[in-house]
Image (cartoon, rainbow, N blue to C red; front, side, top):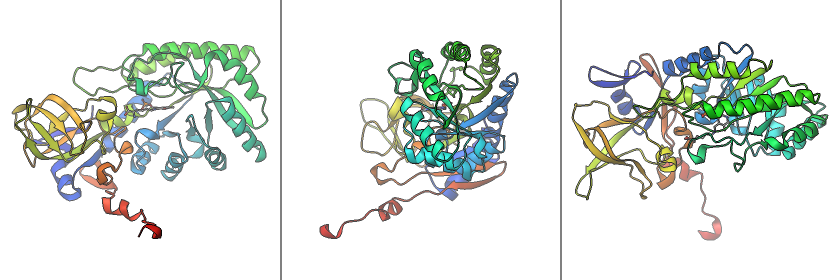
Length: 420
Ligand code: LLP
């Protein structure tokens, strides 16, 4: 359920009509709904009510906007960060360091040091090499870093190959077969408080079965590690729960996910961390765009050319992802169209042969379910500038990220004297 609904014939974000935002902020613009973010946070938390000891750490990569992080901080969420930049954002949004988990396969020495300096709650270590580097840095400070070892369980998440992370051939984590040995080696280091294991097998999962398989493997590993004398108090189960992008898609609900987790982990006796991203932010945002013109005359359906492009919303171009396309003021008429952006490559196509609301030049429309992995993946390709972001709360709204004009980006560039 989200708060982007038609009222009096016009699509609203909560109580704000989208044409108002388009007029005042311009298009393309991402629009987030605070009520939807909070609802998703609550539903996810309630789904985990049978998990006694837990931290829900929002995957910042899915939507790092400071205002969005602030809303989730208000819901008692922590943050899963994968870079120094994300770490600084989580802190700037008021998240307490103990609720910050640092994941990521390539944390630099500088980023590890930053995590230590900021006294974050946990590092998820992805290799022996990273573990010893962290141990060395922590020991030099006279400290022990709290850490979990990320395991690669070799489970097929059955999602898009580019967002699948738990197969043996993926770059993430320590292969399960080497986990015991690596754990023992790292647990012996002075600078580490290696207290558990972590897993994340992929994103936009449509089925709980791969997750349950991975968790079962992890449970067996926890038992083995304990038998070997290790003190295991923490397990991080990652993120991955999918959301419906189109009608008919029916991914598992947070309640079903929570029930499975409670079942799978009931004998573990550990503190659990969760790292949801998409399921919290996905349907809490739309990308509002204006139709530049409708171009007819090709072999197939007309091209609806919108002012948003692959630089603003990369998912269709990158993963062939589907985003519903709806008119802001639908007339009831329908059309079949190719929906494209203005960028000069065919990849800049949002949808082919899509049956959708009929739109014409100047009309406003939205791409739905754009709150996760939307603005955060934007670029300035074709010198288009960076898209703006707005947060709605009831009948008020605020620009929470300015549009960065192409001119401002150009201002950061120099022509060296020897070329002038
Ligand atoms: N934890 C870790 C370690 C992750 O790598 C990710 C996502 C998450 C948590 C959050 O997963 P979620 O709950 O959002 O599924 N750009 C792609 C998605 C990439 C996901 C990367 N990792 C997309 O637009 O579909």
